[in-house]
Length: 232
Ligand SMILES: *Cc1c(COP(=O)(O)O)cnc(C)c1O
Image (cartoon, rainbow, N blue to C red; front, side, top):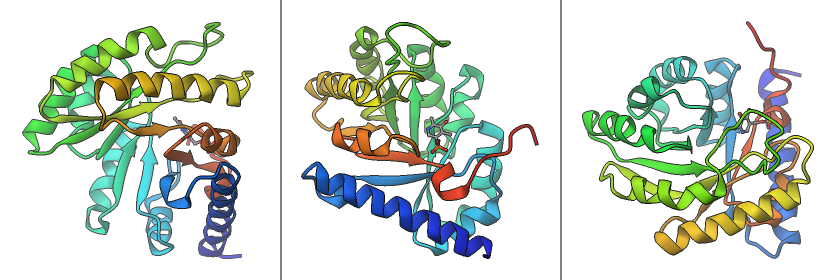
């Protein structure tokens, strides 16, 4: 099978899973955006994905994302930054990312705003929520009780547009329970800002549970591109 055929097959299966999950949840398929997570895969795969109709791609490492964005600037893709964000890289990320899913602390707001302003852009922002109430892992995301304050910080920036929330289901947790909690936090954010309607949740292993709980954006990598080889 050619790489193009492999990607086409992975996409077809994933799109079918999304359609089935939307049907089961009584939702329309066009309520859910598929963000294809291309981290660790070459720009040539993104070109093939674009030919196969993909318009939203997700990356999690700044240097890799910046290089691919530069190489593929002509394709008109929407770039989603989904990885942990270092404060000193935030301004640079805001120069190319259309959506930043991983805003988890107030200290990111000033550099993101600065980077966006410098490039004359507005950047869509999601607040990453830590759903691991038992703190089993290192923290990534704001605690649910910190999210409203963080939302206010983002709302005060003219360069950032608060769009909603994002989370990863904690390892070992029931994703259905985790995503239901995320939906509650999303409602709180929407109460502060009615336009903040996006819920980014669900990956290759749990997109069905995420869609059942109201996800508007699923971030799918390995089910489409295959296993990532790290450390290369
Ligand atoms: C890598 C990554 C994904 C994609 O994970 P898969 O299991 O390969 O689908 C989704 N979200 C985030 C935040 C990631 O880092």
